[in-house]
Image (tube, rainbow, N blue to C red; front, top):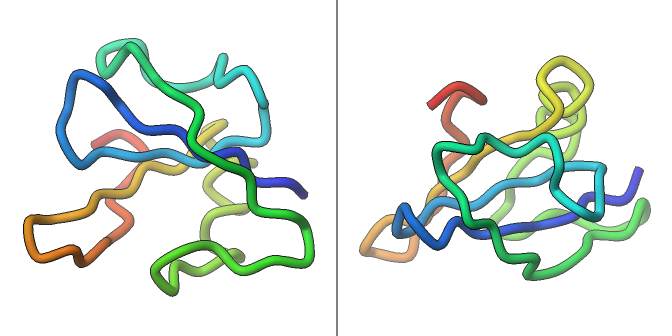
Length: 81
């Protein structure tokens, strides 16, 4: 699965993965979303995030949210964060 990456313009540091290149499944409360890249099916997600966890979340919820903190570290919160 291609993982399309987006960043929220309303919540600093919040990013998301989805399989929809238009980002239609992303939470509206964090709009607008800006597309920032794609991870190919044979590629690794950034920051050592687990592809398996991302794909499972996308299948269950339509997206996976993740954050970059002030130190540049990232983590994947629950999809409903």
